[in-house]
Length: 435
Image 1 (cartoon, rainbow, N blue to C red):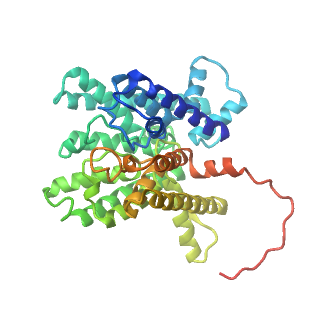
Image 2: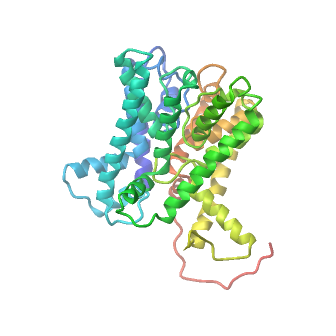
Image 3: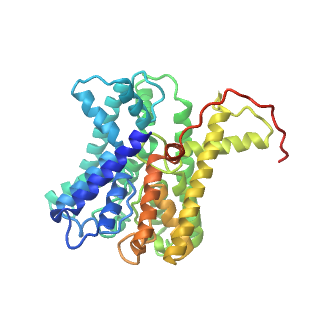
């Protein structure tokens, strides 16, 4: 875990240095803004304090894109893959790092799984690039369309939300191709490599039974997308969506719901949403996507296990199970712990930001949750930048730390900070506590 954490820090540092090069940006670029942009790209968040298209040169945009790709996959995973394709053997420590990076359950077939992961990424990215390039070609020269197609496909699959358009995807609000391609890439990236590959193997009949993990990820993803659509439509039908025909309202709600948990693309102005929607949005962003993918947050499997644990606790049953499989009490307790610690981090950061910046609390909370969930959605600074652009250097550093924690994982980050407890050989008599 320490090695993975260190690799992200080094990658962010390299990205900051490259973005500060004179030929990487236009005009003045402060250190804190380069640091913020590099962290947002590596942590696949999408919050911006500089306009990606107008404030960075083509070289700078390529650096941001590479940071997104390497950050989405994981630096240690990318390095390990280079070792594999050079036909060098992995030692035990390399395999442990790779297993931790990919959230792979076990050591058996790890290298083969890594090869499939890279092949899957290549196929999905190329497919997205082709579709988006053909669509953008209608509106711009072929050279520019190719670059925009490549950048947005990588940004979408890695759940980053970075866009080369000044107003993100708002000009394509009514475009069916964009409203299907971008969310599909986001969903595939957010499901996790293990789930995507398992579904492919199941379709080829190489796997006879879908795992409990995959069933939970698919079920929770569908539930949250549908619930997000219904919530957006019910709260914004006569508000932010008031001027749209009914079918455009549904399309806008679909796009926003997919992006609420994992990516920062938007076809609507989030500053126009009701306070109720912004508040509920914080829960979606905190939840995030699935483990082992490109999404951040506390993960949908954590929320699923916490809900499962609460359900069986209320029923007075200590044997939690789902899909005819038992769930260990340790996993449920770990889910509770992750949610509790994540809530503390976000609440404390929001209070600090609110006191230091003296800005509206709800918008500050929304920005903090977006950073921690590595989502990238924002109510904006009144122009084309994120709300974070209004923050002081201390506030930006706070957001940087939240993005970093959200990408590494709150449990892993906390364990690295406080260290693992030594297993005690002594077991005390059980104490009875009244609740």
